[in-house]
Amino acid sequence: MKNSLLKGIALIVGLFGFVSCDKDFNSMGSDLVDDHHFTLEKYEVQHLKAYSKATGPIQSNNLPINALGIYKDPYFGTTKAQFVSQVELTSGNPTLGYQPVIDSVYLHVPYYSTFKSTTDTGEKIYELDSIYGYSETAKFKLHVYENGYFLRDFDPDSDFESAQKYYSNEKFLIDAYKGTELLNNSTKLAQNEEFVFSNKEIYIYKTNGNGEYLNDSGAVLADQNNVALRVIKERKLPGIWLDLKNSFFQQKILNAAASGALFNNNIFKNYLRGLLFEVEAISPDQGALAMLDFSSAEFNIIYKASNVAPTTEVPSPTRTRKVLSLQMGYKSSTAKRANCINFIEHTKSADYQAKLASSDEVNGNDRLYIKGGNGSVAFIDVFGLDVKKAVNDVMVPEPLGNGIPDELEELRINMKLNRWLVNEANLVFYIDQTTLSGVNKIEPERIYIFDATNHKPILDYNADNSNGATPKKNKGAFGGIIERETVADANGKKKGIKYKVRLTDYIRQLIKNDNTNYDDNVRLGVAVIEDINSPANAYINPANPITIGTSQVPFIPVASVMSPLGTVLYGTNIPASDPNSAKKLKLEIYFTKPNE
Image (cartoon, rainbow, N blue to C red; front, side, top):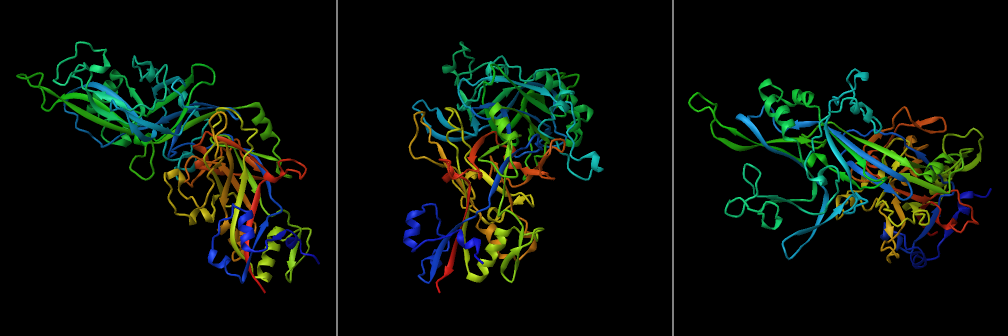
């Protein structure tokens, strides 16, 4: 009987010839490979089947990073992201002093940015990261309101035994309890009606208690409108800066201290239930979208109060400047646990919608469509059918199967009989550059492979503890980082060529067959991600489940929820006659075997 596996293996004569022909090979275990007693071979898995699935609404509460804004992708459509968060006291029962009166209230949420240089005038130049569609003219409306809906810690439907889940399409819960006062009511339109993300550092100028600008000597400037005459007291990183409505916070915070509303955060979060950040396009699809860490926000109430109580003799004691700090956003690694929800609306393009509708989980598709947020993920069924079984290391027909895909079982037989060792295994995805040819198309820097059978990271993810130049480049050996062309196109962009993800430990575990739990562990998921350091799962809204056959997929990686980007990859169902057949999805396994 001919062994079908051996037909699929191309013997490479000599290590030098192999390395020169395959630049993608990473010579792990090179001491073994270079030994002339061993031969290196490459095997391409024959029975990959890949297809895309729409995620629909997903769990989007208490994310490490949240999106805010509007972004139109040239292919996938328009994403609109809004945000609600509880507000917390930095410490309970604060001592405010007597007769507190607000001077100002501000919120500063820094963008992800990198310092680049300083100009001759002393201005610092920053490069912004994770702002999509960024432009100095990409304006949209940003409105902040009080949230009156209580964001629960625990789910009453589970008798408060499990954490509450909120989904990306549940803004209607908040809308029913939204305040009517616009809280970012500054006369500066760049803070509300014409909001725009800016890479400029923020200057805090020297002022007096009346908000008038002062010179170096402390005298009030005669020309309050001449920015060049103002004195910079403090510089802050580029970020959202909002001056908030004094009268609201005077009444809601400072005047409420005597009632006990500020005694602790349990009481305070039920009293002031949070802030809602809404966005609205000025022109259709115009705007930009930023990824933000709201837990890093600086949220301060500046006020004046006296340190002693008023008396008959001194009814108005001298007030001094004080600061009451608030915080918002959720960070599991710190004490900042203000519940929050990211609301994500995605208006899909007609072509993207049609491609998802034609997903073929039986035969696989020629293209894979993966997009973050409430977009889509891809699934890969590895090793094909189960219609045979191994008897004495020979594959024989078994129409009902034995629970192990035939190609995997053949690999196990050959590993055993031929003493093969898995040296490396990679999934290689080529990008469909033709589909993604839009001038303003932003390609995701990274994709992520996960175990879609057990809903967890694969072994290679956990095994890689490497750190990159930035946190987003961590786990570089695991891979998934985009590989781009070296020469820019006519639009100044270097197009993406492919992504490669390392699956060596995962494949070794499957083939070693030391644990029967891995017999059917051959479905992988593929997602666009924002942060490689967030391996947790997010629930799919049970009202709109992902179904594969008769089963439902309960989770997708939370890192995918945090990205608004998408990409199109070549899939598996590409005929040999197609000019793009060489770009179809590949799972490459490199073996070493002893020379007899």
